Length: 124
Image 1: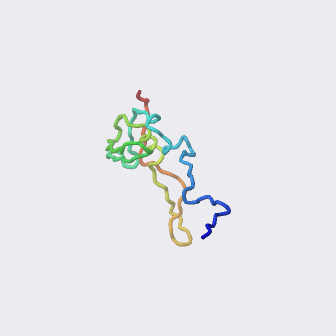
Image 2: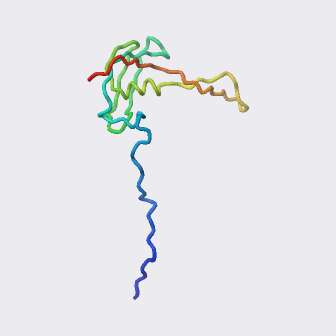
Image 3: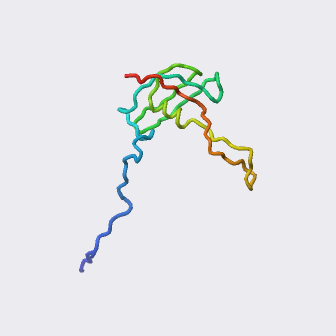
């Protein structure tokens, strides 16, 4: 019996290499434990002044899970990644009272912050 040999070889598309480097090196997901310094600052609850707020999450690969309940106007030391998350991503979209053709409220594109973290110093 005669063996048939393939004339050409095809590149497998299933195991294609995927670039694992982050595109935006300044983003929250691109942080590393070496870049994530501790910062000292004041937590401010903008949405409900005077109330506590729980912030938790894992914001970049290799970060331990963070859980903290903040008091309003509390001075505290937290990782830079958590401070950036509070300042950049804790918001809600403002809706207008104008309705579209289907009767849904139209988004204005404005972000209203829920909390702020005012950084006073970077701890060593």
